[in-house]
Image (tube, rainbow, N blue to C red; front, side, top):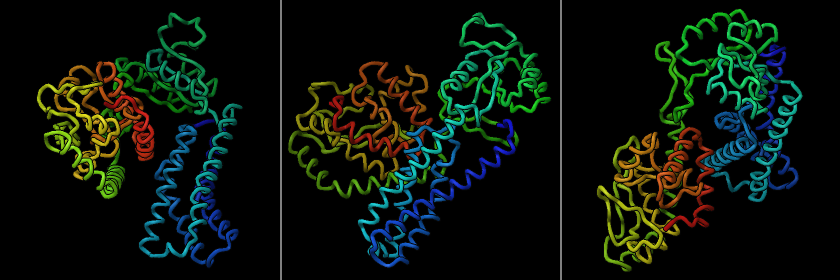
Length: 467
């Protein structure tokens, strides 16, 4: 978006961006060399090579993790999560290279451990300083842009609320234009500036930087005329489609032979992101099955001896794109229900065995689903799969219910770490679970998956909803 003195500010912004991209890896490399000098251990050459490798790795990894997206779209929490995730990926890459080259024994363990903790702390302080500086500049009217909204409908109000509630965006809203004078013109929250025909004149006189058109798509002639008249101004013009009533899974736009398309529902990650997610699934599931194999064996023997029936409970559930999959669990009940009606487990449920109660409380009954992950039927993180009978019931009652099947189901999910684990005995609870699942799809990122994995351990240790 253009703004006053845009040429100078754009050059300054480019210089700051280039400097920041160089400073981040430079900080990591210099910290390593500084710690080596302070420690005084080992030859200098291996540490120089490690510092150089770190510098080269951090440039593409930090960029891929979205560190250098505009600060207007970042919160401190998002920034911290992305930085930590990017640094973990860098460390993982260095460990892999050290394993291949068999050079890890050359370095001091204490030095590398100290360096691993220092780098993200220093980088976060550096980025937060820039973030706060930009916020202060925008609060003082610098690095900000002026805007008006054409259209007083629901979309216009939603947009205005976002702009007014997020001052870090640096967009100062002057008010609304519409041909229909609002009934609440006297209300403070409604700044009515005039009719749509007056908008281009206002934009010229007040040097408005951005115009958001939120008029209904039914008013095609009005929108066309307005866009034509705004061509005589220097403002950036954006049309905001009325898509807020949909459960958007993304906001990506595309072209099909020159025809613009807006994604309403689609898979939330690209092919590269899918490969990263799948690789992480295989690594975690393989590690879990290897480390926990004695636990698997002990539980299997205990289940077999505690009550008659098979060790594993197999149930049909919906997986990716609504295809039926078989999900494994350690049997925790005396029955094996998988028909047209599957009653959910309740507190003090007579079907649950004494051992099954312990397994469900600790979530150990879910451990065989790591096999589902290795099979490619499930993921570590994703919407929890429901029995086919429950899917067929709720898809008729909850709008957007089946959208949760655009990704593989998960062992854990965003709904589960937000208190929606266990029985959903009311339609409202299931609606809340679906809302969290759709929020996960809309906001998916690799760092979001890591956040859910870390929260899962804490939630399951203290959760009272599993029975």
